[in-house]
Image (cartoon, rainbow, N blue to C red; front, side):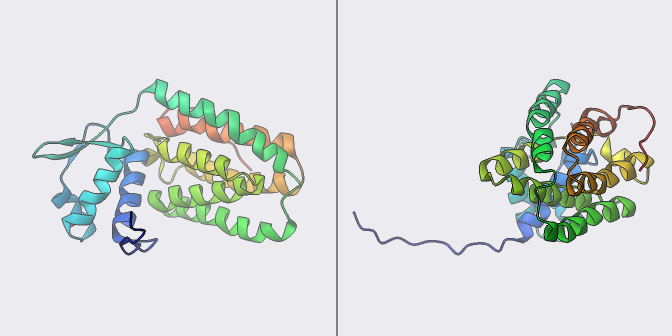
Amino acid sequence: MSSHFTVSPIAPSSSLRERVETALAAAIRSGEMAPGELFSAPTLAARFNVSATPVREAMLNLEKRGFVETVRNKGFRVTGVSDKDLEDIVGVRQLLEPPIVRRLAGRIPEEEYGRLRELADRIVDSAGRGSLTEYLEADAVFHAAVTAFADNARLVDLITELRSQTRLPGLAGLLATEELAASANEHLELLDHLRAGKGVEAEKLMHRHIAHVIGWWAGRPEGPSPTR
């Protein structure tokens, strides 16, 4: 067998399809594109001011992720997620993420906090501007960056995947609210605990932070908004 083979050029890390997919995933996760809604590739392409091809490719990828389903000759329908599915994802995340931040408290090199603070500030800024796509992207980058200090690539990949699957159907309705601002500021509070070596406080905060998925982000009350 010949070892000679042809490879296709690698797409840029920020291709048009990837940017469209990121925006659509954020809209679906946040509830802007609600479960049951039907969208055609040409209609979405007009919104993005792009051709239908990258939109169709993005939607097919989202179908693989379970975010949409194909409706023949009509387009793509946003899938729903059951309360049980959401609770299962949250349950796994609660087992993984809070213990990690507890162990990382006081162990992250001091010189890294400037970069982590910038990432947290991006979350706060995007929340203030009401940009859900940027909010979710910045949130993913921040938590991946913190988890990376556990020095376990498989763990980072697992948590990142769980976060990407997490639906937040009430998030779109929380723009410019105290709840969204409070959740954004929890990232800064987490860094304060980590830097001060307060592992127990960091763990409790992460438990509360993840619980928003079945609270505020699911459109359910959690009681008074926390203040910093």
